[in-house]
Amino acid sequence: MVNRAQAHTLEAVIAALLLLTSLVFALQITAVTPLSASTSNQHIENQQQASAAGVLSMSLENGELKQSLLYWNASGERFHNGTVNGYYTETMPTAFGRILERSFGNRGIAYNVNLIYATGDGRLQTEELIYRGVPSDNAVVTSRSVVLTDDDRIRYANMTAGDRVSESDFYAPDVGDGGYYNTVRVEVVVWRI
Image (cartoon, rainbow, N blue to C red; front, side, top):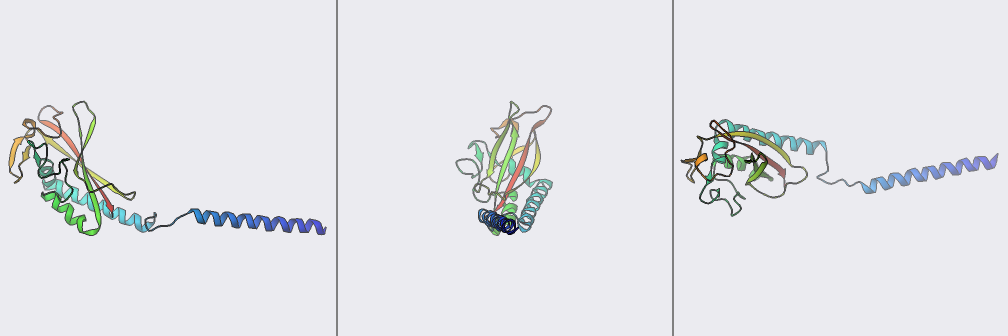
């Protein structure tokens, strides 16, 4: 009887050691960093997404977003005063660009703006409008669509109206009939630095 009791006690001690070792091992492989997912990080990401959606909605409603899409230098084949790659790395010199900068620029929040449109063969093409770097894992995305017509005019550097989009070397091709030109989806990607 004594031997059986000693065997059960030994089994219990070994089981406890295995359980404790497993727990220590699990805690060592789990890293908790300031950027780990938590409810506070999720709350910040939700706020950033709501802010970006608000900027897009307001700019779309008052026409500033469409003017920024049309702020194209046809002879230079890029946006006015953009980099050699065609996009902006600093504030875009339009009302939409200034709103983005006021909303995110001085708050330690980076943003990219991508333009997505259909090509002549039906595929989607992405054009970078503003590029501030590679988004982090906690980046949020929001977008709005802008319909362009054959009567829309590109904007000169001073924002006055120029040629119709259908008559110029515009980044997005004419894919429609009956006055429809193309639809551009404006995608804003926002993340904490």
